[in-house]
Each structure stands twice: as structure tokens, then as C-alpha cells.
Length: 600
Image (cartoon, one colour):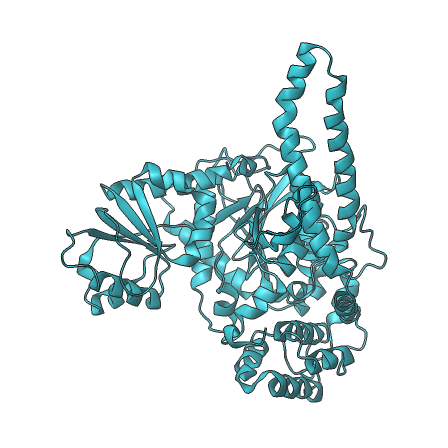
């Protein structure tokens, strides 16, 4: 099931197995039949660690979603609550326990906090008078979840908001703990580089935790050579831009959650000949997206303009393979053909699915609205008219386009201009509040606090200098056969990935001036390895860097890092970790107050 996690340079299945082992141990603590009551947000991440079959083996008979009122009836001995440490969830649990049927034979209650126990939550349960009802109160340390052979995420959706709006560093503590778990499994990482205030905090916590465990030397040969910690606010521009890779566009348009996407079903209906389209499916089509699927692994990181050609090439290969059956003459040849049949049929169905997905996306990317939006984004990135009110944005507000689209564009203009002139900013704010409602004044305030939408302070605009020095805009980016990371945004090279690329070669000293223009400190730390664990590098062996994005990373940035890993002369392979997989919409939404009340 999780074989694709072990294909890469670093076997991430080790991490998944460690998480599964702990889960089994906890379930075995609660002897007898069990029902799990899930905090709904956890079901997706848990699905990547353990399927229902594993839970079933450990006597889990029923599963419910945590909601107020009575618990559904279940003839089980144990009720286990799997929850994040949130106070509002404690109140629901208290309600559940109070409404237990007195006639019912007494059941044992257990609570499992993910990823940490919380004194505040236990205090709340005590105030509600239910703390004594729990037989076990435990924590399940699920920090980094393997999403793919080179990708880990904490799926901590509020990390950016907490760090930059609420000055709450809980997510950084979880990050440091997650990195310590990684080092326990994969060896101490000898070199740490970082950029940004949050990166500095995480590095400090890691070093402090290492000192606290000084007695227990880690005797594992290091798998990672370098750790790079990057703050999201060092590069606020990249997530605001529309991603143009296949996977990035699926996420922008439909949203990928925990490795799954839900798509409109019409394109996937199997029409038989002579039948009308009388009973089209109404349920969304749910597809799993990861590198276990051969075709998806091949096309996910391509610029969307190169996907059509790749799909038609694949179609030719598959039909040629099916044609082979006519050439199979001997029993041996027929047997060989039959043995390959399941693989070929899977490839054919995978091709049909991705052709349908590509058609759905193409309907949008070829529209005038998409083109106009992209044109304005690219003008901002290249520094065209970023200092005055943009007529396209004005028109979008007048037409009451989705508020998130407006906020992304205005933020992008602000970031590319190092803040907007007060007159321009006030104009935008007034237009937004008058069109979408005054409750959004809180959201605008949040965006300002996070540095996305700000008045221009006296300082000059550094963005053009940063753009030129780091070559963030490449004219004529080759989308079909890329030779630079800028293909992921058809011309714009993500700043975060340029910093990663320069660090590998020639090193950050060469861009000292630009680093000073970007927020937060940059630093380097070394961790001592026990003697005998220093790696003897073979001739031509690549180094491995773990790049950790604090505050979220987009699929286009991941594609750019994979591109760097595959470059023959880079000498570096990248594993990516993040607090959350994001796109511009989910990211801006996390900074909004009451996003659910916004205009669709």
C-alpha cells in the first residue's frame, strides 16, 4: 500500500511504520472491543498512516465523527476519542459523556491527543466534571506525515496564522519535535541552514533538545547531509501566484486534500454505445494522487502546456502494448501477455482518468478570465505598473468576483512593490469593504499584519533588485523541455527555491546583500556527530538536503525542487517537509476572519 514511500533516496516508510507501531500499542492498551470517535480534521492525515484494516485487527468495530449531543449507540467496551488539543472539542466530549445512557453497561473512555497532550484541555475537562471518566489520557505524536516518497507534511493548517498574527509559536515547537523524531530514525543532520525568525526559533529549539538528550548518542549513520529551514514570509510572493504545473493546477482549481481530489463526475461517466446520458453519476469522482501511480508520477510536475503531449505519447505506447496480443503465437508468449494484462489495464484506466482531469483543467486554462488574471500576475512579477491602481482589479471588484481572488491580486501587487502608496492602498480597501461588506475590515487588518498588504514605508522598493540578482523572471521559459525552475510558473522562478538552489551552489555568501533585504536573520549551525559516523562519500554520490518550509509550501515549489533533484549536474537530492501543503486560496483563507461568511 505504501511501497511508493520507499522508492526515493530516503525511505520514508520507516517513519510511517514507526507511527503505525505506536498506534497499535495504544489500541492494545484498551483491551476489548472499541469505537473511535474522530475529530473530523484528523481522519485525512490518519488515512495516510493506517487504513481501516489495521484498526479492525485491533478490535475497532465502529467509527464516529465527533459532534455535540449523544454518542451513536455501539455495543463496545471502549470509546476512544482521537482529538487535536482544542478547547472547543473538550466541550463536545464533555457533552458526549454526560449524555451517556445510564441504562447502558458502563463503558471505558479514553482520550488520545494528537500530536501533544495539553494541560489546558485537561483543565477544561476537569472543569466540566468529566476528567475522572477517562481510563487513559495519552498523546499520539504524529508530527510529520509521509505524503509521498520525497514529501512530508504536518498538516498544521493554522501554523502561518499563529506565527505571524497571533505570535503563538506552538507550531514551531511541534516542528522541532518532528525534526528530532526524524533525526532519531535517520541520524543527526550535520549542517543546518536557515532564513527567517521562525527558522531561527526552530533551530534553537532543536539544539536545546539535543543538549537535553546529550546522554543518548544517536548511533545511526546520517541519511541527510543538510537541513534548510525557510520561513514562508521570506517569500510571500510565490503562493499568491497561480501555479502552472499539472498538480498545482489540480490543487488551485479543485483542491487536493491529504492526497485525494474530488472532481465533477460528468467527465468520468462510462457511456456505453447507443445509451443516452440518462443516469450520469452525481457523486464527485474521488482520485488518489501520488507517485504510486506511474503516469501521475511522470506528469504531475510538468507545466500544464506539456501535459497533452505526454498523455498522447502514453496513449500510443499503451495501444501498441495491447496490439502485441496479435503477435503472441506460442503458449509461452500468450502466457507472458496475460501476466502483463493487469498492469496494462491499470495503465489504461489511469490514462483515461488523467485525460479527463486534463480536459477539465483545459476548459479553465483556455478561458479568457484565466488568461486575463495570469497576464496581470505576470505584469506585477515583472514590475509593470505596480505603483498605481490596477484597472483589471477595479473591474474584478466591480463585477463582484470572488473576494479571495481580489485579495490574492492586491497582495501580490503590494509584495511586488514593497508595499502600496497609502492613497492606492486606501482606495483598494474602500472598494473592497463597500463591495464585499465591512466585516472584512478584520481580514484586511490581518493581511497587513502578515506583511501581505501594507503601506509603503519610506524605504525604496527592493523587489526589482531581488528579482534581477536572483533571476526570478526568465523570459521565454521552456515549458516543454525545461532547463530552469521558472517553468513551474511559466517564467517566474520561485524565490524560495532560488535560495535553495544558490545555497547548494555557489553558497549564500554570494548573495549576502539580497539576503539582508529579505525578512529575518540567516544562519548556519553545525551539529557534532559521534565519531565514526562521518559519511565517506562515494565518487559522484549526491548529497541529500531536507528543505523545511515553515508556514506552508505549494505544489509548484515542490515540482521545482524535484526538477533540481533530477538535474544531472546538481549533485543534490531534495526531500521536502512543511507545516502544511497550501495554495494561494487556502493560504489567504487561513488569514481571513470568518471566511465562511464571504461571498462565493
